[in-house]
Image (cartoon, rainbow, N blue to C red; front, side, top):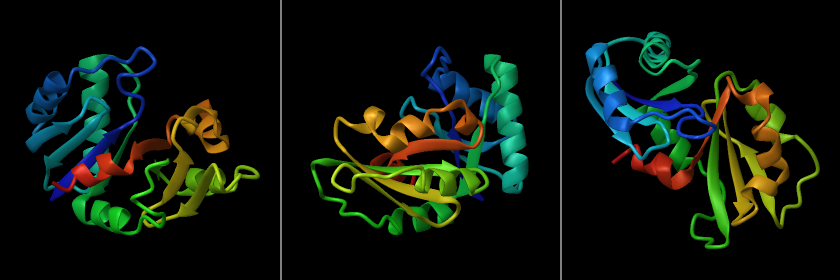
Length: 173
């Protein structure tokens, strides 16, 4: 099965992970056809294991290789396709940033989806398949927006990771 492994908090906040080293470490752990995408912690790999085992192994490899408490989310590429296809907002709006907030259990995504009074002119959210939250925000406002501020809190560190929709689409190529 081909999986996308999404690492949380890589190459931000002092956690430096070289993608070539990451790729080699995952290959050494028994994963096949390992490929990294960008420097933000996106890994494609093949494994006969179930997603929970892929997650467990990936997190252990990250701890052993890079020495930090790692959190990853694992999706098969069929799920990634459904997530991309389900994006509910206008994809060609040049004034907006399209994001997908991936959530381990769905509870965090639900919480973030109702986090406060959002100004729909600035940002909006909608729940999606596989415990994701779709989020659209005006360019330049990501870090200052209600959802942006909330999603960066420590309580979401272990359970969520955010990707630009264009990055998620690249996982399928």
